[in-house]
Image (cartoon, rainbow, N blue to C red; front, side, top):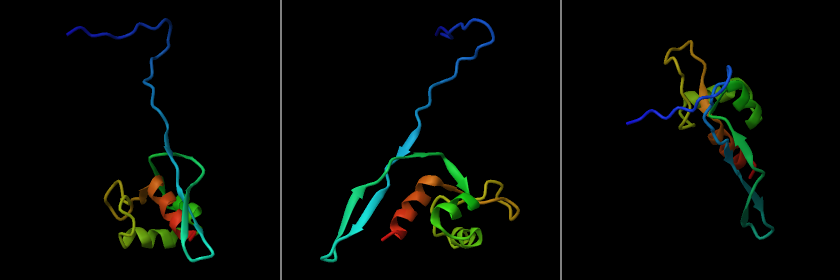
Length: 105
């Protein structure tokens, strides 16, 4: 099988194209009859994962409150990269944004 690398002049490096990940959170609107209308919200560019402070800012909570939620396994994607007690928590931005939309009911 032949290796098909592109030759690029000078010191340029060919970078693979990576499409940004977008999320459209659901917006829940309470109706006068007690029902809930679900509409698409504003599209948000999603990074892979965020830390406790950023999750707290998005959710309107204190960082320690978010840490407790992570420790109690309330977020499926929360993890400590080093696996040790000194590691900082990481969580999927998409899950935090989804949780925020549910808090707004």
